[in-house]
Length: 567
Image (cartoon, rainbow, N blue to C red; front, side, top):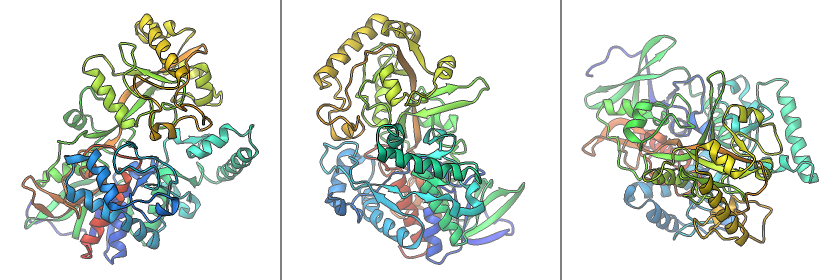
């Protein structure tokens, strides 16, 4: 390491990665008067943030009490103590809870970032002490991508599964309206407004410019960076960190085919999105079996983790889980393209769907959080083949709610059957045979499930048994369990699901200012980490919607302020 060659560029801060963590650090440092450069490995800005659902979990934010949810840091800390426990230190939990509300106010007052707290959105363990039924999860306000001008094409497009009509982004509320355009004037008006805007957009752009979910947050962060004239270099991978006199003083990047040495007087921030798309690191950190079962961008291959470790940084392998899990179904197209669908919140909790393992038996509350569902798959796999597992429904369910890539509203799905993604059969027994399951057992499991649905109580696994489950059930059902319904109407359908993820939780160990620590617990001067490059402040647990983006923004903010000397 030692003395480097002459610097090609000197600045105060270099942020490696352009997701929520890196951009939050860059913006905060710039607001506090530092010169900042953002370097991004891929051709797009936004990282995992741009393709995410966009939820940001910030307990005790200023909006929660206005929505009728009286919150406090103490209540949120109690909840984290019950769910996270000792998987994360008190210091880190307190740093997040104290700085989170500050971060929201800070960015809202100084940038384009605008977050709206959800009036009702239960924490994932709503019956646990300290939990809240709303107010903590915040969504980015819809953003007009047209305000980015020519830089709109820099923004990473959302997942295809979050768009309709080939490029129109929709929220869950939008989806409900679109499915009811023929049943409600309000829904028709809402749907027509969306479609008219989209039609206008497509005359000038490759996709819709009404941005929602994580794409809105990424767009707002990009607009804020551009407004402050922060350079954002895309297609510029970081190669190695430069250390002089026991301090990280810069980074070597490749830009336009040239290696450049960039000096960072105040610090380098690692925010490259973790390692979900690197099979070797998945094999090292995650439970087996695992494959490239991730919804994260392909460029998230552990660059930050490896850059940090090369200069002595400590990587934590001892989390409750080293990834944030989610059941994922996979379509293999004839041209070799792979399409993955994350079964997060749309289909699993609805009435009329059950999940079974390789023994054709239920093994999980289908309406539980996606992370808990993934954990249950691995737990079941210890004794019974459960990877893949199978989501099963009938034709009534498929037409109303859809199943994975088979979209609701009687949209075409025969191509999915032909490709082997969606399995169809005239009877449950025939479906079992096509899935390689025991017909008699699957038939018995279905009979039992239907009996529980008729009773309205899942005595076996508790589907619909708490506020979070019911929040994701059929919103039109008020007088019974909105998550339970029978599987009776032929033909019957199934998709195979695998324990994939939406990002990794294992990462570099930091202190409360996001400073990276070495194997002895000493800070590495000049080096910071946030986002999924930083070991999860949740310790690999998943307490509520937005517990990756909330800490990413917060610790990016803390890193930026610390580098500016205003911690």
